[in-house]
Image (cartoon, rainbow, N blue to C red; front, top):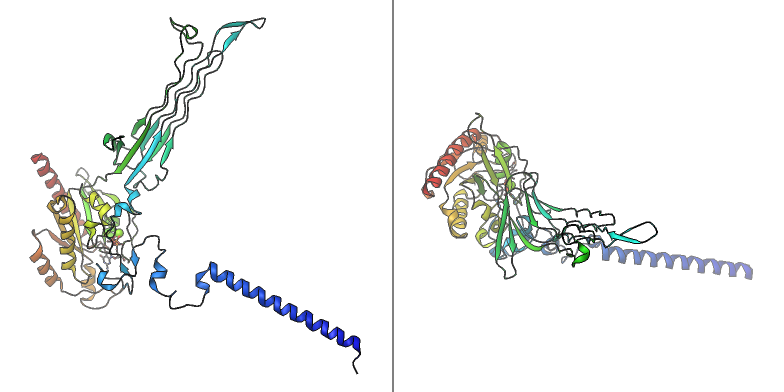
Length: 453
Ligand SMILES: Nc1nc2c(ncn2[C@@H]2O[C@H](COP(=O)(O)OP(=O)(O)OP(=O)(O)O)[C@@H](O)[C@H]2O)c(=O)[nH]1
Ligand SMILES: [Mg+2]
């Protein structure tokens, strides 16, 4: 027979155990709730959460969203996008997150002058002697400096730049130190305008040479100290107070200066060509919009003495680029300033001829139509795919629809000129021939435009 005390013990133990189980259960429940709230992926996949729009709505680039297929404007030729389609937005690129790369507004404030000192010389016996206050120092200027190592205005995130105030004067005719200048570093080709109060813009300058400086806001003049010398000493007339530094709102625009713009659909191989012929190291990858800011590179001719070429690799353009779809709009204006357009056609695209026509339509639609009038050289890229076996799946899944002759024939039918070459940027085949011809052609175009001016 179990004793009464042993029953009591058992009951106490089981109560203790039950309490332990319950508190462990509550602990795991709250841990699960916390994790599911903070880490969405912790939850078991529900049909709602697996919907593509949920995954892409926080994509910082906001390029791919799950729009319906009928809204789709462009499918990448080589990359299977699956359900991901490129946004068909009417928002201008200059208004969204890419705008700050080549255009920005900065408010600058130069330093005001330092105060002049109001001191008197102390003579023996503690009597006040003649005035000996030094002048205040000049306020720091705001200076814009051309930095050859930069290629975008992206780093200029500070919207307000202030230079240091001039230091105050001191006794014994000690003038205050000048304030330190505030330096804004910008890439070469930056144009500076002041935005006036009525909204008009006044041209301040353009920085084209490395280390070139432009003072955009003058620092204030330091105040006069009591010991100011001259015919009318400071004590006999009101002294000049320090003046304030200039304050201006500046609009900075990056105008890339290049001879040739590399234009083509995403993935055509523009960056590959730039990397093949210059020392530039743009990002190259087998997905559209690898390039999001223009890259510049300098091609040096093999024979010294002849002129080199500055090439500009522009982000891939898609249907609607002239209206701001994709990344086009903000970058087409850089193409606007080049001499020649190198139109790169991707031979492995679904329809290279349609790509070519689409890009030309966009150039006609952009701005004043100046782009469409610019001379073009058409280069069909990825020639190596033909050599590896036409029409067959090869290496990275690249394939071609037409034979070389067919494609050449079709392109020539829609081209208003006959400047067409084949190359493989990846294998560097035909690249030297292209660059030599391009340099001669650019020279001709430059000469003809200088004749007409
Ligand atoms: N087979 C082959 N592949 C190439 C050639 N040129 C480029 N590619 C490949 O095509 C893909 C895209 O090349 P990119 O140079 O990044 O293309 P892009 O035109 O700059 O593309 P975006 O910057 O997205 O507009 C990469 O995987 C390259 O290796 C070529 O001549 N032959
Ligand atoms: Mg690129």
